[in-house]
Length: 180
Image (tube, rainbow, N blue to C red; front, side, top):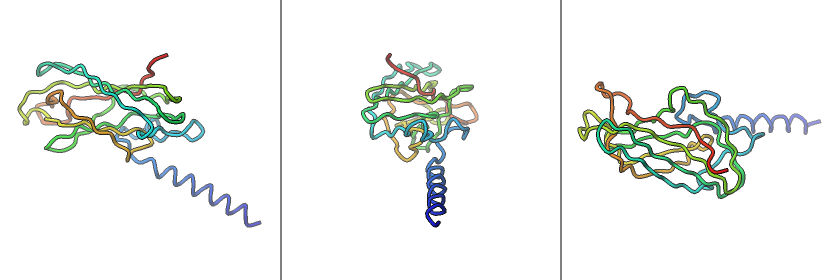
């Protein structure tokens, strides 16, 4: 019977294709940052989500500020499995924002109309570009949809860097349930 080997070949090819679509989400590469498991629902796509941004901006250099991104599902049920991949964009280049130290991403299923949020926490830097990342925007993608990015204007001041000019002092939380 030729249909069994063809069906098996198609199943293997589909599995490999789904695996290849994962890409790196900017996280640590752990299992919790991979695509949503099809058995647990489809990965959420930004095109199906409403995006709102609220901030508790840091008023002065050395202060900590937060930018909270709230997502509302306007489409079919979907799953977020991993961390959002966040980049700070500046004239000097792009900097990855890493997950909070010790944070564990939990899969989260969003029904139609459900909301979730994640928070970018940062330390405001000095106006000196040698000591801070002078960001003009932040960009984020969702796990399982790495090519689907949303950019937001960064109007919260420069982000501090260590004296050696290393990684910007900013982190991103996992997705949190919102509402009931």
